Length: 341
Image (cartoon, rainbow, N blue to C red; front, side):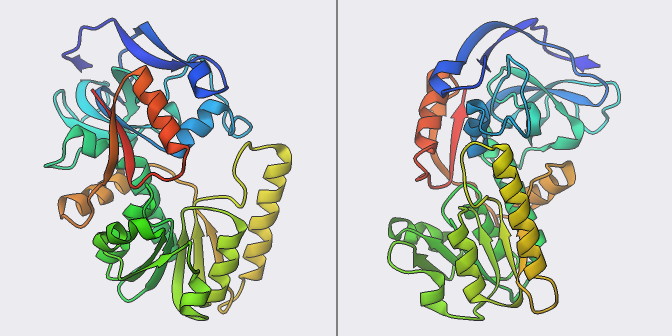
């Protein structure tokens, strides 16, 4: 292992139990700084960003799927500088600028965090740490949606939730692939979504996709919002053999055994109905973050085809994180919320 950091302890925002964010997050001043193991890289965190999954996990809404051991440092997305590398790491050296979705291990609220090397990538050239931190989870999810939907040149794509964290990346990536892209958003975000590369924008408060376009209008509908209504609308506008790609469930909130049964039943029944060349394919996306996927995102960013939009930045402090989560919970965020040192 090589290192330029002699720190033994650090300040970190930690989750002490499940519950309301302001009740269960605290600032710890003596969290140990541990050296990376063979296939890990230690990163001095300079910025991190917020995703809805962060506060869902803090509140315990997903504990039935993934339980946490406390204390836990939240926020999966991070960007910073390499301060140490494990004995088996050859792709990174001390001083490298990097970013990652640290998957289920979090760490965006620490000063120093160890990241598995297969989740890490060099931060895009020309971007600040704040801009880079906005990218990993949302952009990898967006690119996975395009892969699942088979989006390419000439594909007609509708994106539901076009101005959100994942949606604003989907619009840009689909446009970069040569697709004809329609965004579904509110009127107040019309210019923003058009600026991302959408050819047209549907005001969700005034009309819907079936009313605006009719049957057989799209090859792919990508849903970043969730709710049964999105599936119902998509079936009315997709062509035979079309693909409905979604990152969300029909119902949000706490995952219970009954909710898991409903989810699996829904996925199975919709896939059965979509069997055959003329059926509508139902394709739920569950992100598996990985170095190769993040490298593809990096290439799109460095080519200028994808630009992260920062809705607002907060200090990477306990109060800053509390404020960011409160804002994200409103569901009105345009782009990403980012925390910076």
